[in-house]
Figure 1 (cartoon, helix red, strand yellow):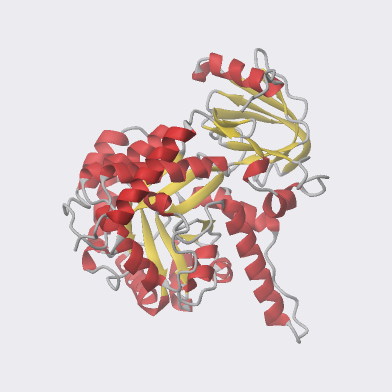
Figure 2 (cartoon, rainbow, N blue to C red):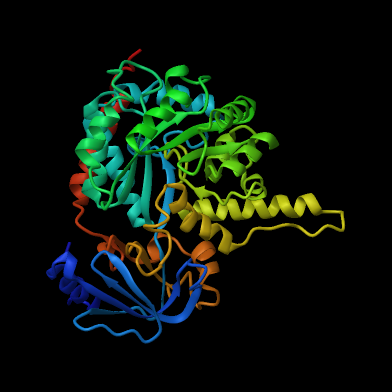
Length: 467
């Protein structure tokens, strides 16, 4: 097939100039954009500029200038913070949508955790995690917490961490031992080695957390959060992410954790669906963070199947959002924001229907806040990312507002939440480094990646599960 020659565009020239400069000496000035900062003090600039110096947002405002900066004309675009995914099982990515109509948690656990997971090799961990992270970048997610609950050996964990490093995403590696099958029983002790090998600096893209389950119902007591695991995480100086928090048993566990003093801002409870009012009171009083998974709760049918946004807000908790399992769900944050926005507003109007009460509805600003600033806070990174605040790291999106599906731009937050998708993201910067530019993820050999993904999937689907 004949491919016509195309001239380099202004965007190509800007990228070449940016990449020709040492990272710590770069200055990039985006001009003429609508800037959605998600910083309560800065708000939205209808026409503004943003200056990146090295890995940091240096200034936001109208009419900025900077000597020796690479100037990028961002007229007709929206600049906003990158999205923050607070919980994704990234290793599963080569099994995307293999069970799109899974009926319940038991079906997922049986097929994936007791089946496919048991045959994963370290190279499968690497391939799945890398695919998930690159897809996250493509869809505007600049920070991803990888709840890596298939850490069968130290080599499996190394492969998952290396995949995050190789993609350039701001990654949070949350390590947990597997639910079923044979494994080295090296977790949680291996977290000490991981910390010393990969997480020695406070000023790096990757951070480490301990991952656990809420109760022993699914996989036994060894993986369930409690005082012993809490002390282990505290000794390492890392946060904790707790999955499968839903229902009566988890409500009772939350109250026990409160009594033991092992809740707090460094602990994230994932799902938090169907919890009692007493449990929510304890969560709110301790400042514990919450990661909602809107499509997971609703589509798979976890506990009440209703994302617990109303309960969280009533307890004074502004939650983060997450993708969860790509074996059954969408991979992007736009879907999570829209799903939560629609479900909550539907329920609010339904509850007030036929009465004189006014529905208490969340807004598009709320869900964008959950997907950015609150997600960063949930991941323990509020001082680093989540808003376009001068001094924070330059994790940002350039979203085309004049594309066919977005024009004309009437409300920038409404356009981001309800109108946009991955095709509208012209550029993604993470730590000041371009990772997507002119609509394409950079430095990825798609042919080679595709071969790796298909080979890994073939192995996982053909190998007999281990007991």
